[in-house]
Image (cartoon, rainbow, N blue to C red; front, side):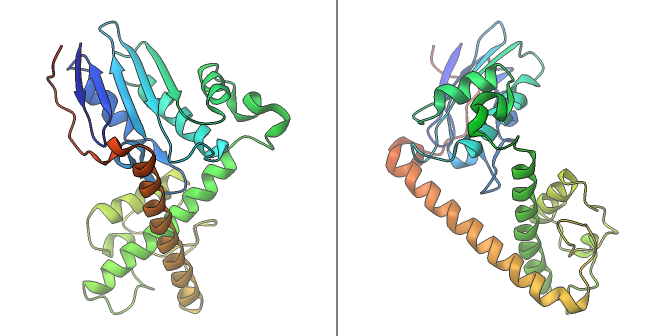
Length: 250
Protein backbone atom coordinates (compact mmCIF):
# COMPACT_ATOMS: atom_id res chain seq x y z
CA UNK A 1 0.00 0.00 0.00
CA UNK A 2 1.21 3.54 -0.72
CA UNK A 3 0.65 6.59 1.45
CA UNK A 4 0.88 10.11 0.05
CA UNK A 5 -0.34 13.63 0.71
CA UNK A 6 -3.35 14.55 -1.39
CA UNK A 7 -5.08 17.85 -2.11
CA UNK A 8 -5.70 20.15 0.85
CA UNK A 9 -3.55 18.08 3.19
CA UNK A 10 -5.48 14.83 2.84
CA UNK A 11 -3.66 11.61 3.59
CA UNK A 12 -4.10 9.36 0.58
CA UNK A 13 -3.08 5.73 0.83
CA UNK A 14 -4.11 2.95 -1.50
CA UNK A 15 -3.39 0.55 -4.27
CA UNK A 16 -2.21 2.79 -7.15
CA UNK A 17 -4.66 1.42 -9.73
CA UNK A 18 -7.76 2.06 -7.59
CA UNK A 19 -6.88 5.19 -5.62
CA UNK A 20 -7.35 7.74 -8.45
CA UNK A 21 -10.84 6.38 -9.12
CA UNK A 22 -11.75 6.60 -5.43
CA UNK A 23 -10.45 10.15 -5.20
CA UNK A 24 -12.38 11.13 -8.32
CA UNK A 25 -15.51 9.56 -6.86
CA UNK A 26 -15.09 11.61 -3.68
CA UNK A 27 -14.89 14.69 -5.88
CA UNK A 28 -18.48 14.08 -7.02
CA UNK A 29 -19.65 14.60 -3.44
CA UNK A 30 -20.38 18.24 -2.65
CA UNK A 31 -21.10 20.48 0.27
CA UNK A 32 -24.83 21.00 -0.35
CA UNK A 33 -24.81 24.66 0.67
CA UNK A 34 -21.60 25.69 -1.10
CA UNK A 35 -22.05 23.48 -4.18
CA UNK A 36 -18.33 22.67 -4.23
CA UNK A 37 -16.59 19.28 -4.22
CA UNK A 38 -15.56 17.86 -0.86
CA UNK A 39 -12.06 17.26 -2.21
CA UNK A 40 -11.57 20.86 -3.31
CA UNK A 41 -12.88 22.24 -0.03
CA UNK A 42 -10.37 20.18 1.95
CA UNK A 43 -13.08 18.19 3.73
CA UNK A 44 -11.44 14.84 2.92
CA UNK A 45 -8.66 14.31 5.47
CA UNK A 46 -7.86 10.65 4.74
CA UNK A 47 -8.47 8.20 1.91
CA UNK A 48 -7.12 4.66 1.95
CA UNK A 49 -7.81 1.54 -0.09
CA UNK A 50 -6.52 -1.87 0.95
CA UNK A 51 -5.33 -4.57 -1.47
CA UNK A 52 -8.59 -6.42 -0.84
CA UNK A 53 -10.69 -3.42 -1.96
CA UNK A 54 -11.69 -1.97 1.41
CA UNK A 55 -11.95 1.82 1.36
CA UNK A 56 -11.54 4.00 4.43
CA UNK A 57 -12.38 7.68 4.11
CA UNK A 58 -12.34 10.33 6.83
CA UNK A 59 -14.10 13.66 6.51
CA UNK A 60 -13.59 16.84 8.52
CA UNK A 61 -15.71 19.98 8.62
CA UNK A 62 -14.98 23.62 9.46
CA UNK A 63 -16.60 23.53 12.92
CA UNK A 64 -17.59 21.03 15.60
CA UNK A 65 -21.21 22.17 15.30
CA UNK A 66 -21.79 22.11 11.53
CA UNK A 67 -25.46 21.31 10.92
CA UNK A 68 -25.99 17.54 11.25
CA UNK A 69 -28.31 17.38 8.24
CA UNK A 70 -25.64 18.92 6.01
CA UNK A 71 -22.99 16.63 7.51
CA UNK A 72 -25.18 13.56 7.01
CA UNK A 73 -25.67 14.38 3.33
CA UNK A 74 -21.94 14.72 2.76
CA UNK A 75 -21.06 11.49 4.57
CA UNK A 76 -23.84 9.55 2.82
CA UNK A 77 -22.90 10.92 -0.61
CA UNK A 78 -19.24 10.08 -0.06
CA UNK A 79 -20.21 6.56 1.00
CA UNK A 80 -22.38 6.03 -2.09
CA UNK A 81 -19.77 7.46 -4.46
CA UNK A 82 -16.90 5.35 -3.15
CA UNK A 83 -19.01 2.20 -2.93
CA UNK A 84 -19.80 2.50 -6.64
CA UNK A 85 -16.12 2.42 -7.69
CA UNK A 86 -15.24 -0.87 -9.44
CA UNK A 87 -12.95 -2.93 -7.25
CA UNK A 88 -14.26 -1.52 -3.97
CA UNK A 89 -15.90 -4.27 -1.91
CA UNK A 90 -16.35 -2.50 1.44
CA UNK A 91 -16.60 1.18 2.28
CA UNK A 92 -16.19 2.98 5.59
CA UNK A 93 -16.69 6.74 5.73
CA UNK A 94 -15.98 8.37 9.07
CA UNK A 95 -16.85 11.92 10.03
CA UNK A 96 -14.39 13.17 12.65
CA UNK A 97 -14.35 16.01 15.20
CA UNK A 98 -18.11 16.62 15.01
CA UNK A 99 -20.64 16.56 17.82
CA UNK A 100 -22.93 14.11 15.95
CA UNK A 101 -20.15 12.05 14.34
CA UNK A 102 -20.98 8.77 16.08
CA UNK A 103 -24.66 8.89 15.16
CA UNK A 104 -23.98 9.95 11.57
CA UNK A 105 -21.26 7.36 11.01
CA UNK A 106 -23.40 4.56 12.41
CA UNK A 107 -26.49 5.68 10.51
CA UNK A 108 -24.71 5.89 7.16
CA UNK A 109 -23.01 2.53 7.68
CA UNK A 110 -26.38 0.94 8.49
CA UNK A 111 -28.08 2.71 5.53
CA UNK A 112 -30.65 3.92 8.05
CA UNK A 113 -31.37 7.29 6.44
CA UNK A 114 -31.55 10.57 8.31
CA UNK A 115 -34.83 9.85 10.10
CA UNK A 116 -33.75 6.36 11.00
CA UNK A 117 -30.55 7.80 12.45
CA UNK A 118 -31.94 10.71 14.44
CA UNK A 119 -35.49 9.51 15.12
CA UNK A 120 -37.80 12.15 16.56
CA UNK A 121 -35.09 14.81 16.20
CA UNK A 122 -35.41 14.60 12.40
CA UNK A 123 -38.43 16.15 10.74
CA UNK A 124 -38.05 14.24 7.50
CA UNK A 125 -35.57 12.70 5.11
CA UNK A 126 -33.23 15.09 3.33
CA UNK A 127 -34.49 14.92 -0.26
CA UNK A 128 -36.29 18.23 0.10
CA UNK A 129 -33.24 19.92 1.58
CA UNK A 130 -31.06 18.60 -1.20
CA UNK A 131 -33.50 19.91 -3.81
CA UNK A 132 -33.61 23.34 -2.16
CA UNK A 133 -29.85 23.65 -2.33
CA UNK A 134 -29.77 22.42 -5.91
CA UNK A 135 -32.24 25.17 -6.82
CA UNK A 136 -29.93 27.70 -5.19
CA UNK A 137 -27.05 26.23 -7.17
CA UNK A 138 -29.07 26.72 -10.35
CA UNK A 139 -29.69 30.36 -9.45
CA UNK A 140 -26.03 30.99 -8.64
CA UNK A 141 -24.95 29.21 -11.81
CA UNK A 142 -27.41 31.22 -13.86
CA UNK A 143 -25.80 34.42 -12.64
CA UNK A 144 -22.31 33.21 -13.54
CA UNK A 145 -23.32 32.10 -17.01
CA UNK A 146 -25.42 35.17 -17.77
CA UNK A 147 -22.58 37.47 -16.69
CA UNK A 148 -20.25 35.58 -19.01
CA UNK A 149 -22.75 35.88 -21.87
CA UNK A 150 -23.06 39.64 -21.40
CA UNK A 151 -19.28 40.01 -21.16
CA UNK A 152 -19.00 38.09 -24.43
CA UNK A 153 -21.21 40.64 -26.17
CA UNK A 154 -24.79 39.45 -25.74
CA UNK A 155 -27.21 42.39 -25.71
CA UNK A 156 -29.81 40.60 -23.62
CA UNK A 157 -30.07 37.17 -22.01
CA UNK A 158 -33.87 36.91 -22.17
CA UNK A 159 -33.91 35.13 -25.52
CA UNK A 160 -30.75 33.07 -25.09
CA UNK A 161 -30.72 29.30 -24.89
CA UNK A 162 -28.32 27.28 -22.80
CA UNK A 163 -26.44 26.47 -26.00
CA UNK A 164 -26.05 30.19 -26.77
CA UNK A 165 -24.10 30.77 -23.56
CA UNK A 166 -20.29 30.70 -23.66
CA UNK A 167 -18.98 27.15 -23.45
CA UNK A 168 -17.03 26.24 -20.35
CA UNK A 169 -17.10 24.85 -16.86
CA UNK A 170 -19.74 27.24 -15.52
CA UNK A 171 -22.20 26.38 -18.27
CA UNK A 172 -21.73 22.64 -17.86
CA UNK A 173 -21.98 22.91 -14.09
CA UNK A 174 -25.29 24.75 -14.52
CA UNK A 175 -26.46 22.11 -16.98
CA UNK A 176 -25.57 19.35 -14.52
CA UNK A 177 -27.49 20.96 -11.65
CA UNK A 178 -30.54 21.44 -13.84
CA UNK A 179 -30.30 17.81 -14.91
CA UNK A 180 -30.16 16.66 -11.28
CA UNK A 181 -33.40 18.50 -10.60
CA UNK A 182 -35.09 17.15 -13.71
CA UNK A 183 -35.21 20.62 -15.26
CA UNK A 184 -34.71 21.41 -18.97
CA UNK A 185 -30.98 21.21 -19.71
CA UNK A 186 -30.41 20.78 -23.44
CA UNK A 187 -28.76 23.39 -25.67
CA UNK A 188 -32.20 24.28 -27.03
CA UNK A 189 -33.70 25.11 -23.62
CA UNK A 190 -33.88 28.67 -22.25
CA UNK A 191 -30.82 29.89 -20.41
CA UNK A 192 -32.87 31.57 -17.69
CA UNK A 193 -35.51 29.35 -16.12
CA UNK A 194 -37.53 29.13 -12.93
CA UNK A 195 -35.58 26.65 -10.74
CA UNK A 196 -38.82 25.16 -9.41
CA UNK A 197 -41.01 24.80 -12.49
CA UNK A 198 -38.38 24.82 -15.23
CA UNK A 199 -40.36 27.40 -17.21
CA UNK A 200 -38.44 30.07 -19.07
CA UNK A 201 -38.35 33.50 -17.41
CA UNK A 202 -39.87 36.15 -19.63
CA UNK A 203 -38.80 39.79 -20.04
CA UNK A 204 -41.22 41.01 -17.36
CA UNK A 205 -39.70 38.89 -14.62
CA UNK A 206 -36.12 38.84 -15.86
CA UNK A 207 -34.70 41.75 -13.86
CA UNK A 208 -36.03 40.43 -10.56
CA UNK A 209 -34.91 36.89 -11.35
CA UNK A 210 -31.37 37.96 -12.25
CA UNK A 211 -31.18 40.06 -9.09
CA UNK A 212 -32.09 37.02 -7.01
CA UNK A 213 -29.57 34.93 -8.95
CA UNK A 214 -26.80 37.44 -8.27
CA UNK A 215 -27.67 37.64 -4.58
CA UNK A 216 -27.62 33.84 -4.34
CA UNK A 217 -24.24 33.60 -6.05
CA UNK A 218 -22.66 36.29 -3.85
CA UNK A 219 -24.02 34.63 -0.71
CA UNK A 220 -22.78 31.21 -1.80
CA UNK A 221 -19.29 32.51 -2.54
CA UNK A 222 -19.15 34.46 0.73
CA UNK A 223 -20.14 31.36 2.69
CA UNK A 224 -17.48 29.39 0.85
CA UNK A 225 -14.82 31.90 1.87
CA UNK A 226 -15.91 31.77 5.50
CA UNK A 227 -15.94 27.97 5.57
CA UNK A 228 -12.52 27.72 3.96
CA UNK A 229 -11.11 30.20 6.46
CA UNK A 230 -12.59 28.35 9.42
CA UNK A 231 -11.25 25.04 8.12
CA UNK A 232 -7.74 26.51 7.75
CA UNK A 233 -7.91 27.85 11.30
CA UNK A 234 -9.05 24.49 12.64
CA UNK A 235 -6.77 22.35 10.47
CA UNK A 236 -3.71 24.33 9.32
CA UNK A 237 -2.57 21.38 7.18
CA UNK A 238 -5.66 21.85 4.99
CA UNK A 239 -3.89 24.80 3.36
CA UNK A 240 -1.70 22.36 1.46
CA UNK A 241 -2.69 21.67 -2.12
CA UNK A 242 -0.97 18.72 -3.77
CA UNK A 243 -2.30 16.40 -6.40
CA UNK A 244 -2.42 12.81 -5.13
CA UNK A 245 0.54 10.90 -6.53
CA UNK A 246 0.34 7.42 -7.93
CA UNK A 247 3.45 6.35 -6.05
CA UNK A 248 4.55 6.98 -2.47
CA UNK A 249 6.61 5.64 0.35
CA UNK A 250 5.82 2.31 1.96
